[in-house]
Length: 217
Image (cartoon, rainbow, N blue to C red; front, side, top):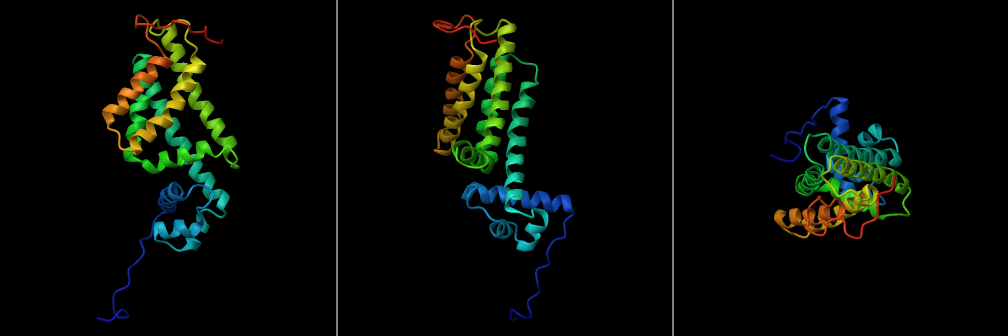
């Protein structure tokens, strides 16, 4: 059978919301490889196996494409933190659970974490202001968890929730790098425990609270 006689592959027709989700997933994969500076509609079309015009139909400009990717990364990570923060468990357990779930995401959704790493380091990019806003919301969530632990009598009284929140947030970068470099989950979880011990020292732990400043109100 010649190529001319071969049956043509029929394109799957998707509902608009399904096509949007498919193209967004493809865009995330592309941007994880290229960064925000290089990803374009044609690459997304190739990834999704659709015509370039289809990508433009759903994302008319490159800015719209980048905005959709950033919005999805923001939504995913903010929800990850919020879902665990709302559970009924001690504050330190919440922080450890968030960091563990984040490290698991490196395995289950590595494209999301790669984009987060790229987004967090390009201070000259037009999207830096959006990253600062995203980061502030995550840090605020961590700070609230630590403050709740202080109020519950779990965490040392003079712990600074804001600085603790920054410490946990900054540790996320190293945690992701450990996973990408092949460290075991056990090693990553131990790193998280050491990190949280510094950010939110538990009452009664050896050396907890020594030399710490009183938290800012």
